Length: 206
Ligand SMILES: [Zn+2]
Image (cartoon, rainbow, N blue to C red; front, side):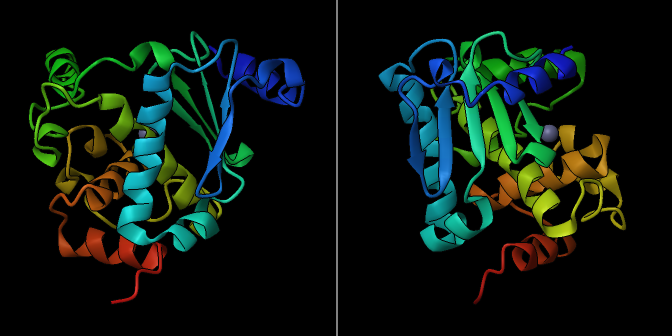
C-alpha cells in the first residue's frame, strides 16, 4: 500500500468521526479508528505502554513519547504494525490482536522473518501472550530512534546487524534498533554496544 492511504488517513484524522473510545496513557494518545476498541484490545495497548513506563519511568515515557499517536483499527495497513516517525504516529492492526507469540513465531519462522524464541524468550507464557503487545513496543522503538537522531537507520549503523537480538532485527539498522528497544523493555539480553546506545538514548540513569 498502502503508505499513501495511511498518509491520507492521517491527514484526515482530526475528523472527530474517527475518534471513538480513544484514551491517553503516559502521554501517548491512543486513537481508535472505524470502530471502538474492545476491552481486551484496549488492555493489550495499555499493557504495552505500561511495560515501557514500568521499565523507564512514567515521566521519562511521557517526555519521550508525549504526543505520539497510536492509531488502532482494522485493515489500515498490510502488516500488524507500522511506525510513521515523521508523523509521530504508529498504526496497529486490531485483527492481529489475539495472535499469541507462539502462533506468530510458528507463522513467521516458516518465512524466515523470525526465529522461534525471538519473542517467546521474553515472556513467561508465549502460548497465551499477545504478540501485538510486543509489536506495539517495537513500533515505539522506531519513534524513539527518530526522536533521538532525527531519522531512522542512525542509531545502530555502526553495529553489525548479524548480531541483532532477533532474526527480524538483522534485516536493517532500523529494525535492529526497534527490536533492541523491545528487548530492553522486556528484559531480554542485549550485547553491551546495543545496551549502551539504548540506555543513553532513553537517558536511563543508574
Ligand atoms: Zn519495525
